[in-house]
Amino acid sequence: MFLSQFKIRISGPLLTFMVALLFVAVTSGCYDSKTGKVEFGGAINFELPAFPETGSHAVVVFSEMHYSDSYRAQEVPRLLPPEGSVPVTGGEVKILDLDELKVLDIPRKFETSYDDNNAQRVYSVNCQVCHGIKLDGAGPITTLLSARNDGSLAYDGAEPVNLNSDRVRELSDGEIFGYITWGGRPGLAAAVRGKSSSAIMPEFGKMLTEQERWHLVQYLRQRIGTK
Image (cartoon, rainbow, N blue to C red; front, side):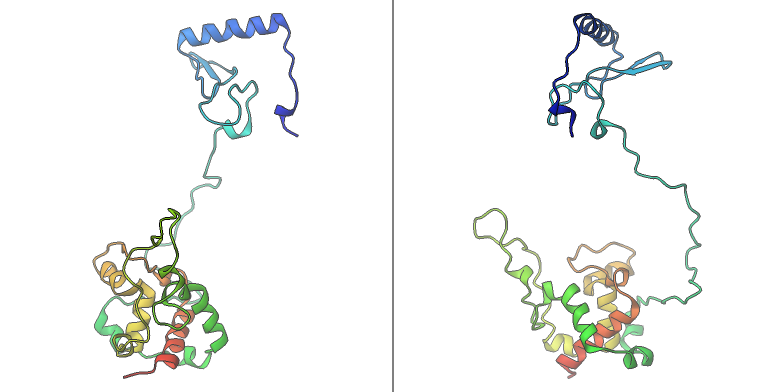
């Protein structure tokens, strides 16, 4: 139950005192009208009614939770592992060099663990919105209308890549893996320069496991073949 549901009665003497106190605080420059906080010389601190510019109440007599201070960090600083350290469970070496990516094949351990249903689920969740259910680059993002209700599209960036094209079919397994990992050609190029990519395709190296990305390569290869 909210305080706004009650009618609060304040006696005449108390109201007079509060008005007088508010007048003194305002004239002395120690009163914050948005929060109601009053500070005198750093030693005296209390709260008076607040007059926030936004919110459901024009005057806040009692301090409420949505006007209180907010502290985002609730944990002590933690000591992060050194850069380049590898977890005891093993780590992935992410390759940026395109020539190295070109000669990579699907690792045997991922090839034998491949499950088409799982790979299709990974594709549907992460790739289908742009590249489409038919892998033709005609995903829902290309036809989604904007909220302006003027017939324009919500997305007006570069067209998603047609994964059925010869351009993709000619890529090696390692190249496809690299582009998935770094966010397409623009993402890989940006990573080589140590920059963040402005392309819509995210770096799936941060979102999917190494196995999931190699399974996506195998999923695509089974459907588009090679040239």
